[in-house]
Length: 457
Image 1 (tube, rainbow, N blue to C red):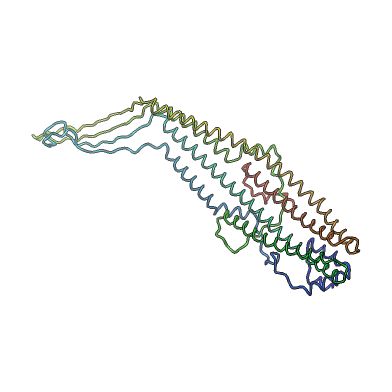
Image 2: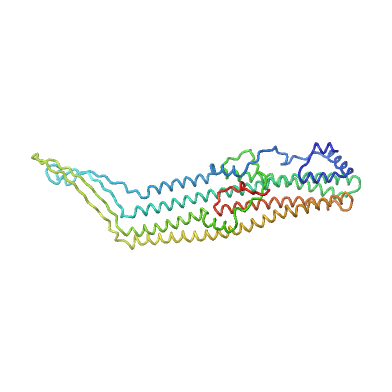
């Protein structure tokens, strides 16, 4: 029997449970005989070949390089920066050439005012308009740049959440596989007890039905794992592949800072708020620009006229023309005043959106801080109090069952509580870490979270 246990070790909580189960020599012989006679079960997810775990920081770095949404946002940022670079440039000058004051029938010599003309015209905005146009474009470019940072942080947040979801599924698979093995051992004992007339057939049927249910749960978890893996591959910009992403063991991440400091970081550091502030600045500059349109622009024209000799052969002097044209902004009520009103409305909209986003950020941060605190305390209770209690209850039920003081269902329910507690602890850790990811997103933090010092195992 010792050799059998050496060849087929079971680690973790199921291993401890089985070692306690086999303390009774009679139960050991009966269980082993039943297991040897029973057909092997189909392999579960625990039988997959081991793979190297991938830390979430590595996946975040990959997403920053290949995520299509981030790449699109960066192209948009590049376009906005180039648009801002030329916002204050002058219009292209106009070159003109032709014949001026030609006499009819056509002749270049008969009339003194006939000349071949070459002209250059340049439009010049009223002083200050070019600077305001540059300021408007710069504010727009800054807003787009902050929006890119928000997109990067959002993709990082989504990837960390998907990673935690995948890690929860993988942890649940391991817990379910261990519980499945314990149920097989309990079913073997129940069958042996029934064969000796010491147990009820209902115990055997209950154990077998729970084994089948656990197999169905493992199939569901395998399907869920494939879906979570697809979410990660989408965020990474990968095509679907056979290579599985194995997450690292779960760790309870610490809070980045105290709540007051996080609130200040959210108000000052979230890129979305900075982007809206830049839109407010853009609105201010557009109002100034619309008001500056009340002042005229200028058009400078330089012309050179070359005259032919007279019919008698005498030379004529060439002509130089310099003119300045000014537009008259007389249609203020129909054209200019609506532009000023539009600029004011757009600025008010940007300010209202900024206020709404700040309120939403503060509310969301408070909710996530409350969720982080509740799940952290819950995970600590599972680890320090509830898990030892349910394991002690399972030990007591096992000992009492071996002495014939409790029925099989009592032992069975005690083991199921161990299983449920392990799942609840894993879910609490995943929910806590997702709350940390959301807090980092709301505060504009650029850390992946998993690399922080002080992560709790």
